[in-house]
Length: 126
Image (cartoon, rainbow, N blue to C red):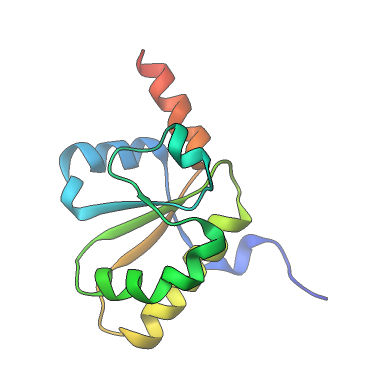
């Protein structure tokens, strides 16, 4: 029952171009978190951390602890968008940080268009 669209999300989104600019000019302030499965091993965004969605809840406490102190923007993504996986993982992380690290300045965002948007961006550059 219920479950309207993604409107009540309160998720923050970042576009692929914005992410690329951040990685170019402020790489230390950004951490990409890739929640795909094996696709990660074929290709991924430089510096991305691999946390597959099916293990996300297991790695969540360590991830939250690590980034609660860091003044970083975490950008989660999976393959395509809109994705249940990256949104669900982002919500979990936001909820966990709020509960256990209420003073954390860590921001959690979702990559708009997922990895496919990133790949399209790279192809435009060629």
